[in-house]
Length: 205
Image 1 (spheres, one colour):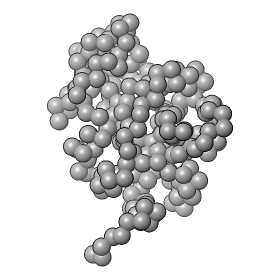
Image 2: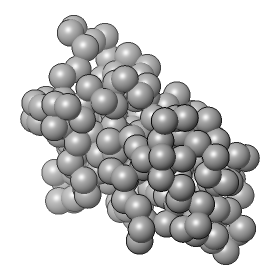
Image 3: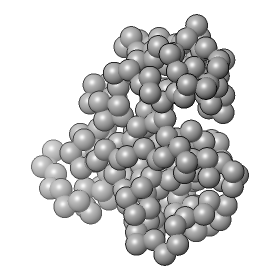
Image 4: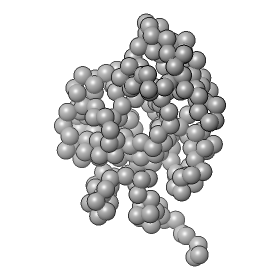
């Protein structure tokens, strides 16, 4: 799959010579030369090739013990708009690094820099796989009335998302119980709780 339409015609820097080819033959932007913030300069004819988040998890997610559960219960989520990402960036709402804390804090209203829609009907904490031109990542975001808000990636409109969403207060209870945020990174603690709320019956070993 080629994602050539994610780069605007006005972007001037040719990063094709710095593309990184991984063990599966996919071509990604090499973050040794270009970080997330530099991608606004990427040229539209850069030859990149990589799958969507759902496809990547299906094809290469064998190492993740939660993969089958996510593929069964997860959904493809629409990428945020470029306009929305720009609005968040201008508000200085993006915090690089810990996507799990970033997403949960915004979902709970602890982090107030990102302005969410007035009187949203529903705010959910999301977690799963996200594929960005720089690579495939375990990632977290929030979903507001069906639309992704990503407080970590300033160019989230370039990414594809696949995951599950949860009530932020339920996620907070989980994080407080184990002292860490993230279901996927703490699967030994998360599995029993998720199978319980999803009503999954596990066969005895």
